[in-house]
Image: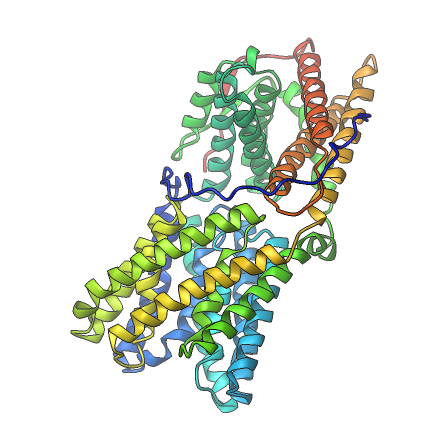
Length: 562
């Protein structure tokens, strides 16, 4: 373990920059999947309600339909579980909201319950690593349900509508498995190979090599998490093992970039697109030894939920306090829909204060632009209810298609869609809707961000210390095995992957802590030394692998189809 000590002195106040906050990124590789799934899940229930003349019930069906936005990057076995939990979580939040709404119409009480729900939803989504869109959709629906007039007798019927739409959303989310049952794991493996190729192209010393290395290890870890969620036996096991061998090659490239051909990695990644055969590298005995380490990882159990919730306490407190204060401020201004301010605040909170600031700027810009878009399309939507529904579907598709470019761009479509949904129950004056939405956006963003500033996250520094210690221990374990004349291949592979995972976690933890204000100084020297020594040990492990006499660097093709 390094003897370096933390840099003394207080942590400096970080400048909140606007540079790059609104910059557009390349779209997600599967941007069209959540967009199409959203439309497929929302359209049938809404059109059925329109046909029966009960479009006023659309809020309840949309509660279930919007669950189709989740888990698009997960393998289908894991996606089935995740979607089921999301639907149950949505129903639980809506049930609490409807019961509260039926028992009281006190706006302060409703805002308070909405803020508590938002905090719980944020903590559970982050701890469960549900992925985008995270807690925002859950909070949006439950907060809106709090302010919908309700009686206890109506609740079972409304929950039944949400459950039926949720079941349909589950089917929509699982439907692509009929066409490409191995698509998510193939994409995750291809992304790991491409990220490793980007780092190998720097030869480990070129411009941007540090960020490319961090991105490469993050992609490899994501690929392992995807593959290890697949069944260990049965028809899918052969595909999983073939992809595991490719991820091993990506790990080797990250540890020894100067000895890696980036084009070979990119070629393997390209071969994973579509439904062709899965490339295979190395001979079977060598790869089999490497995968002994994977079996050890499969046996490891994830940390208990309560342990994962502990580090998220400051973010949950920020969410609860910020949402409550935003809702109270909206009430004080006489706005009729304080849940808009509450949801705006809930959407801000990210891993640290700097990212929260960026999200606040994006939210304000996107919502205000969306208000202007609503002014342009409202006259068309008001011509007929069918046009109202069709406009909402188009905006729904646009929001999911654009949000991966930048959050603010997706918000440009989300805002007018939310405004049009409020008119499902009846026409409302566009001017009033636009004014209230703009004011609530500004109030929610301002008050929500101030709450994030007030609620400090002093645990961030402690987590960096823990991550450094974990990385040092993983390095020492790998070094001990390397010191042996003939370490067991499976043990060495497991130790190498554990070290890679520890270094990835260390970099993510240090980056998150660096974006916090008011925290104590971070142990920057220890972080740098742990990363340097850890990556040297990884490279040594790769050299030991390369020296094995049974290593074959040829390329074969695994006869496994999706």
